[in-house]
Image (cartoon, rainbow, N blue to C red; front, side, top):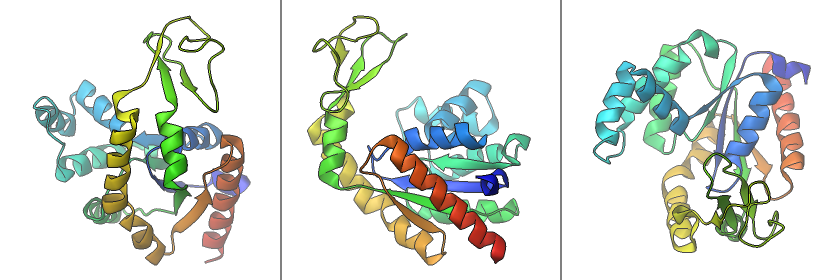
Length: 231
């Protein structure tokens, strides 16, 4: 994995439940690259009171979506910081073609570019099974996560770690999962062709165990880095 020690700027694509967050965290731990989740960045920017954070807070306090120009300003603040000098991993942004084009313009402004786009591919029926089977500990200091099929608790409805009741998040219920997947297919899925046309896209099968998927991601990125170096 020596090739991955060089500067890498990586974007992850994948439907809800495809494991983007898990794989991004594994990759960040492995490489030392900064994992940039749009949700975490919004919370950080508002907590620090940055210019973009203050703008975002105004919309969030009203229950409104944060506009693309504010999101891009937030990413500009972060991507131009010293902690991103060695590269980064983008998770949850861009979500549509307009955002992808804005990100391209921002990276060009920063004299930077993406090295690879990893698309985690998995069938909808497996995604639905993954998401709807998820249960979370109601104890917020514990927050352990279980799955009714793949990682059930020893006692049904109870957390193994603290004994608190388990619950299903509202957005993990089947009707909302279908809405989230529909939004992904209509808004985010077109990015697959967008980045494929730029010769950046690499698709990884996300239907197996997390450790196997991660190994495939590492091999894919190593191959992509070697190809880029030859070019």
